Image (cartoon, helix red, strand yellow):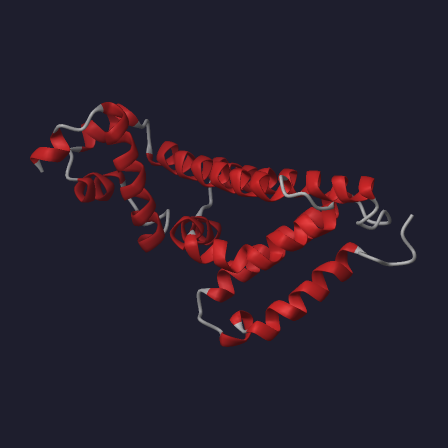
Length: 205
């Protein structure tokens, strides 16, 4: 406790974000209060409010940091010396590992999707997914320019399809379904993704 009281402002803010993330992941957004977050962080609510205006402000911070992590991840893949289709394939094949490594972050978003009702919270979550789609759209557009991705489907549509599949995978993989982590599934996943992208299809423009 004494050590926590000696935290500087930046350290305290980071600690509150980490505690809030765990609270949201365990209890969901609707059932998490600032009082619970302060209790778990071993601070008073006034201390929490010195760093964040509200529970929604904390939630926004968590989503922003999760989105930034995702953007860095996409940027690392995009930097690979390959064409657009191969970059998206690399994302799809590596996503199970990335999902597991960030399970706590994604769980916050998954639970919020099922519980938030106010338009402001929905807008924040919508903005998170729109940021993911923006990154994917850039990769699709790159693939269209280099000829590795089909031109008969809008880049944004492909990006949203992959995003929806990613959300579904996050939800289902938490159930421990063996089929979706088996080696054969990865092999089939590669074929499916390349087929969706039109990779190697003779009908590309």
